[in-house]
Image (cartoon, rainbow, N blue to C red; front, top):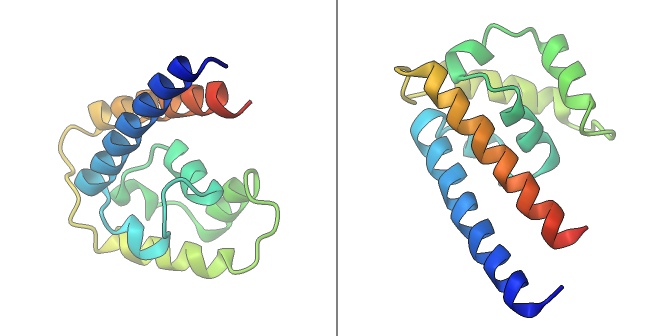
Length: 122
């Protein structure tokens, strides 16, 4: 890949990473008390669920475990993560208004992120 194109993709990647981080800060800032980074397999897969914190707590632990196992094969400590996640979601101070638009924004950002990642690393 030409260096110029790679540089442009890296800039785009940094922008979309910032936008996703901003989305999390607005809608579910407590996510970072459970996951170090939103870019890990489990955290990213969880974001793809497009559930805001007040919706996330309605899922059973088993449902979340089965969902996360689609992305994370080794599930060491995942049950504790799910419990911590639900506790964090329960006390979330994230924005609740405009849920439908928030989900559309999240979906678009994740798609853009994955597209740039695919172009850069595959």
